[in-house]
Length: 294
Image 1 (cartoon, one colour):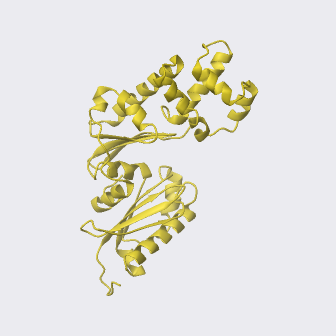
Image 2 (cartoon, rainbow, N blue to C red):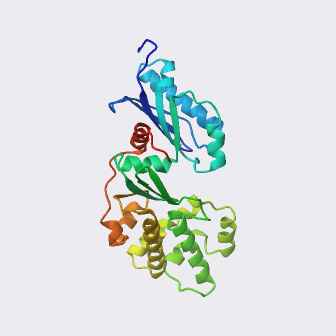
Image 3 (cartoon, rainbow, N blue to C red):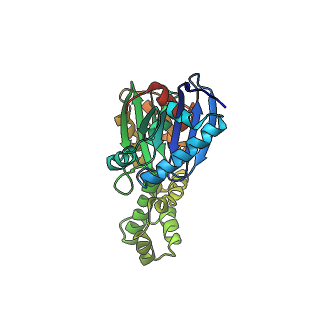
């Protein structure tokens, strides 16, 4: 175990969400000393639980690295935590003493962006059930979307499902033709309009997202409604990227719909596509070392 009163500066990245809190501990040379995992760390849901998870994961990481508990005071930390984009939540979370040498709070998408580009400037678009985009350039951030369904998240999987359900209702009213897509939606509800409307009263983004594969499959199979929905989706994605890409930077697209949408993007965006160089914890460690503001 490391002894003595003078401990070297160490760096720790934290990636926290509703399911788990992951930490990665590294030295000044970038060597990974330990990784640990604990419970959820969504600051919007609970500042208390988030700190509890961070404290548990930090303690585990220090133990794995054979470092004393007081080494916490030497840790420079960058944490990407879900829910931190809400000012009231982040203020509650940051109101308490953290006991680290430094603690910078980011959104979990921000650290994913930096990690995807190996610590360099770049843009990340995450297209799954929800959608969010970040651009990191010269220490400054741009963001699009991610404000939550149904108010936002246009072009996401939940949005695709919503369009499919709306098209099925339009078909029932005689405002749209019947196609394989509308038939598949009605099949899910046993051809019952009251069943669909009853479901919609409590349906969440993840529930609408279950219909997204009907749209992507229908697009490939030439369904006219699916093709129109996807055409609108791609227009939205291109517009989002136009807003993000100022200046134009290398682009990484991730999420469950990434493989589907990437070949359909406009040439100006497709030619900038790159494979991710690292993960969110890599990004958090990079930000910890950079000491960047957000």
